[in-house]
Amino acid sequence: MVAVAKTILIAILAGVAFIIVLQVAYFFPFYMTMVVEAFNMANIAANDNYIKVEYYEDALDKLRDRPMFNKFNSTDPHLAQIIARHIDEYDRDDGDAIEPSPGHPETYYNAVDGPIVSGVTKPYRQRGNAIKVTVNAWYPLRMTLWGREVTPVDIPVSFSMTTTTLKYYKDLDLIE
Figure 1 (cartoon, rainbow, N blue to C red):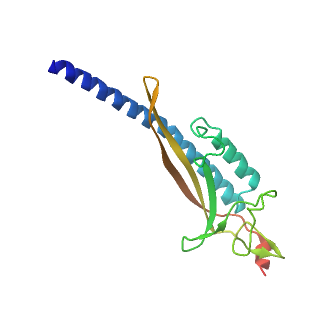
Figure 2: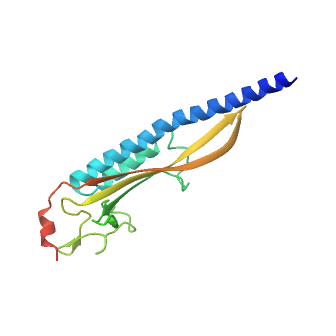
Figure 3: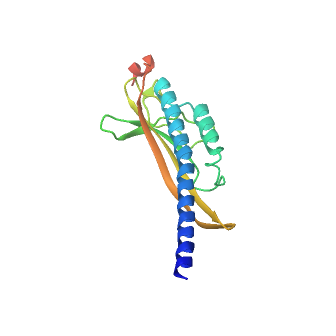
């Protein structure tokens, strides 16, 4: 009887170990997708010294449509996010690095967020400044045993990459 109980216990533990290894195998492409998106957005930010709103929205939509990232509905706070911020020489936040969207009043620039040139604020800085691109997402850890979902857990995951801007803007020399 003891041998049968040990066999059943070993079978259950082996099944749980298999499911955990399978979840780790699913996590690798999930995390690598975040790394690739952060790298792509960092390249865009480095080339123009900011991220244009079209590139940002396309990348965010593409990321949220991926199979592992679309587990949440559009009103869920666990949606994937892409954040790009200017960083000063002391590694402090120095304003948003994403171009303001024309139809969204909550994304505007004031004097703190960007340089003012001829009365217009600019979302970019001069060459040599740093931009930190962060991709935040929630990994949906789900295990289904015998048709039932067991302990659904959402694990917060993020990846950050800092890049240096490359483009020289002549109009930033005219800062008022």
